[in-house]
Image 1 (cartoon, rainbow, N blue to C red):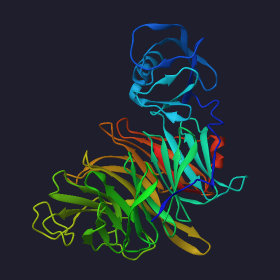
Image 2: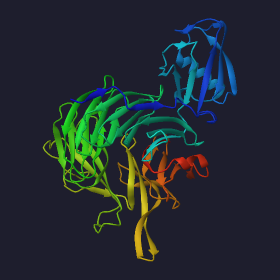
Image 3: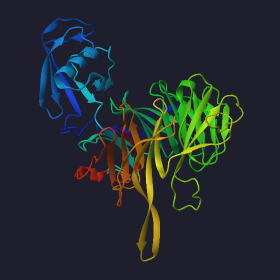
Image 4: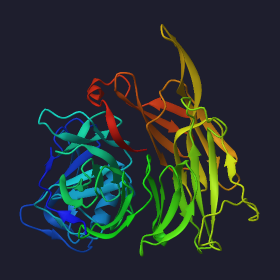
Length: 465
């Protein structure tokens, strides 16, 4: 059974070094008090002589607030919002390397760091080693390009996942290990071992569990509280392993490029199997377990002669009445046809089942000429938003200035969603592009910033719109 070992080869981080001049992505609250004091419960009276000095990471003064006795972290966030403007729900307070909850106590002798969640950020890793002969996982403020944090590991990182709310990062490595990073304390808290090879997919539940899949098709479930393996299942091995987890019902769909299979994460049993070679976008199960859905993409591939269904999205329905297999059905439930929609869909797509929407990158063929002859390649054409309930196009944004996106991350909270895509240009440099469907804006975030020249040959990236 795989388990967490001591993080011996996790070489730590730069402890938020380089944060100076990050234009307010972080701020520090310095509590000035003549004597030791602990905030434990609410009161309306201020402690005599106690002040909370709010300063930015550059040392610029923002405000001085009276320090209330028995004040909770939630109440302190409200006061910060009233003075400084950052919404309380967008604040994360860190003290002594620990992420504080709204009911925690604040130690007056320790500084408190304010992490602004509404900022656009990216965590990325690349194939190039640092001067210290390690691989780096870098947290950056996309608005300024500043490197906020750098975590270092001796093993090449093949996949990343981020729990922004709890300030955790998960990295899968080429040697089959998974590292759990606490961004509040800048350290590796678990090394999860047990996979036989390259990690190609990570899916956290944003609480206490993590699902992982490796290139050999081994699916594992981990307990993040103890760093222990709870389940290991050998699935079908394929060239392109993808995974999507429905945590409320503890079901995981694994697609191998030959088939897509649903597994019960409590028992490891196979629930349904679908013969498809398409790429998995997402998997969902309805609230009352009557039916589920799986969304696949057949991306444009101009190197292939199989062009009939390229550029299409396919929505499959999982019927609980057929537990022995996974049958594609139409909306009336009687046919075995797959619902197809979309056109010119490229590789990247992201679905939100609660709002019944999917964002997909679209592309177009471009012919190039050289001394050796002509060839075709895929060029980006923009993003589209489709309805999963009506299978109709809702809105789109077009822009042909970029290479096809490597990644697509979406903020679904607004009426019309926002997204960030990452693109690798000729030469290996990375561009991050912000898409605002509400305002109709497409903007290169890191254009003309020399500090971004170091972000090259990215192998994995997760952005926060």
